[in-house]
Image (tube, rainbow, N blue to C red):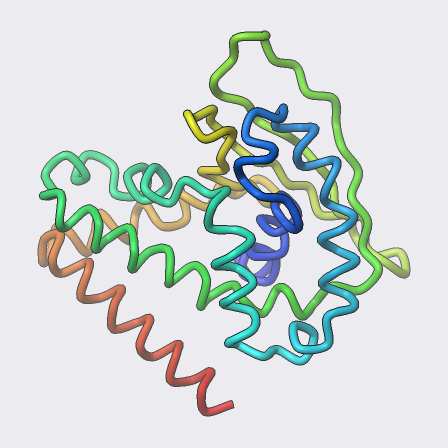
Length: 211
């Protein structure tokens, strides 16, 4: 879980920096990740504000460069499981927004950890008409560190391919939250989960503001 926390934003950022959603909307998912990953890592290494951990800069970076390429609603729906169908449209929007912000707050320090990593890509096998695909990659660490195996689940939407889950060393992001969500909803309902996530986000934001 610690590795997941340290890498989530970086690994998502590998997919998105420097290209508009409209310009590459229908680019193949593996080509998208492969073509831009080096530029993302290079940018993260050279941007002084990101390296210093400037939270405003990091959040702006994530909001502008990552949000358009991640299907947060589907990610949230999968984490909520069967309870998602019980939520009202307003609850779904609130829950998605709070979960999105939790992920950003929790994993934003990953961007400061970039240090001469490089990415290797595994061949992708997919049918021409596929709408779901898993792209497997490996982060090679500098100075002989253990490589980090990771996989992206992407789905094809009207606006191009979007990430909706990430696997780091065998742990899918959605699964790490599914049990927690179910437990909280069982105790206090959808609104209770929303309140819990909102409170956690406030605590994380306050803690970062104090640093």
